[in-house]
Amino acid sequence: MNYSGVRAVEVVVIGAGQAGLAAAFHLRRVGYVPDRDFVVLDHSPRPGGAWQFRWPTLTYEKVHGMHALPGMELAGADPRRPSSEVIGAYFDRYEQAFGLRVHRPVSVSAVRESMGAGRDGRLRIETSEGDYAARAVINATGTWDRPFWPRFPGQETFGGRQLHSSWYPGPEEFRGARVVVVGGGTSAVQQLLEIGPVAADTTWVTRRPPVFRAGPFGEEEGRAAVALVEERVRRGLPPHSVVSVTGLPMTEAVRRAREDGVLERLPLFERITPTGAVWADGRAVDADVFLYATGFRAAIDHLAPLRLREPGGGIRMDGTRVLRDPRIHIVGYGPSASTIGANRAGRAAVRELRRWLPERSPAEAGVRVGAGVGAG
Image 1: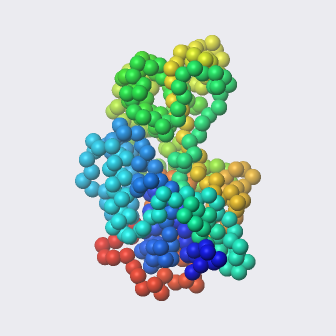
Image 2 (image 1 turned 90 degrees about the vertical axis):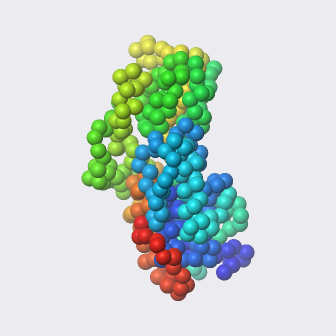
Image 3 (image 1 turned 135 degrees about the vertical axis):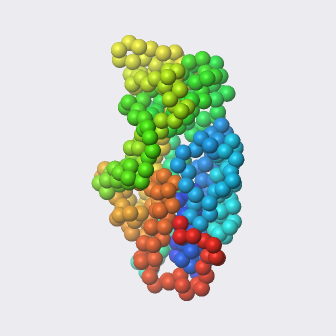
């Protein structure tokens, strides 16, 4: 159906990372037909979500907590291959196996009320391949496109190189350099472990003392961590990452690095100078590079026309459904930012949307995903 040149569908899925593909799988599974009842839009050049942009030395064996997409296991992968290649190829096979027909590269500039909203309650999704009118949107844009750059006094005076961890090219670029790594998350630790052996010197700086987690991390611990993130979302605050409340895994490599002094942490410096950084107590270090492993923010600027944010800066949600607008579901956000959380959120969003869109029963299409598809 077309509305004055705008293509009408039931659901638009924005993003084809883990959460977006999980949502598309479940839409397909309950009978919605790709490119007729729903479309999946992805601005990345190829399959793989954010994984396709990971640094080349992050091999698959170094990846923690990667869960398979619903309906297809990731089996037989060479652990020594770059994770970007392994997971990118897996996502590609997944899209082909379930006929998800992802449109890429397509950028979404805005989601706003349709001109026909008073008639049929549709949303207008403005994209680089034309506009869509949809009864619902599943937003799965993740965080990779919004790296967070901290600001420090004197930062603009530094004479060396400053880069975010999302641009990390691998350790060889830092050979012989004096490197200050800022950030207390997994990326900071993984990149320090690589840079340490080749750099002239490394300094690790974090806002808070890092917490290392020894021993197994089971379902009970996982639920408790997710609950902390969910509480912030319920209060309308920007979510912290799940990783920020789980702690850093104490691997053998991390244990050795701590013994060698590579992971000796310092508190945040007071200011950056043309040649390095200084602390309030007079300590100073010289540096050639500042590497900011300071995380990401949710890439949801295209939803701004709908005014979904609360006074606290976040978006209040009930599960995946936005409370200010039940036509919008956000997956891979806050408590569903992990790969297993993304899987569950994709399924939950589709279940909720089936209740929200009862007039268009997918059973009418007479199409279901083929045999062998699991429940996810």
